[in-house]
Length: 259
Image 1: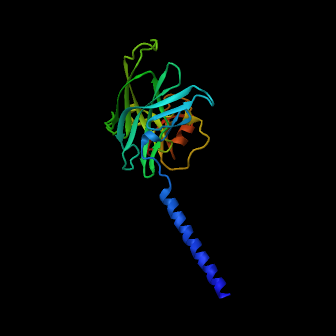
Image 2: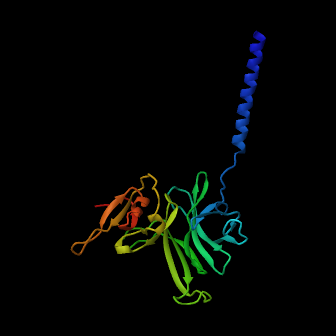
């Protein structure tokens, strides 16, 4: 009887040792998230696109021979876009859908402890001429400072010109990344003396649900006007998603409303 108990004990010890050894090997061999922003996913027009060495080829429709070709273009700017102490990167992508157009997008990759996370892509236009990309943290007309605003400079065609014409009209767009939704919002830098007013995008109006996270924003809510002038009423929302769900809100700025 004692010999049987001893044998069972040895088997249990060996089994436990093998279990811990196996789990230790699994933890060592577990794949890590890529630390290269040219090898992660970005959301382009509602579709996830996975880059591999800065390139992705995906069928336009399932089983189609025609592919959407997405490429890393460049014009990088490195900056801490979400104030977490890590350097992030914003840059341009191009996408060729098999026709004559080449579409240019702005994307960002946030540098997290687990690796880079890609953003939703912001469309600049078709066959534009990119110039420079930078960061604007200058002063607005009321003396406040802009923060973490990506500025993309490029050239477009004059209205009415054919797409074959060379882009010759300079244009700039000011963009701010919302780390909660991973979407860029277009900033009006000097909107009525305010700073960093982010316009609500169309896709933000139709979200099914908002994340319950408190990252307050201040938005001006339009009111029904009985007798002019009727100024909008500032209101604090728990985050940008809830603000943009309100059809009476055009845009917001970070932080709670003051006064």
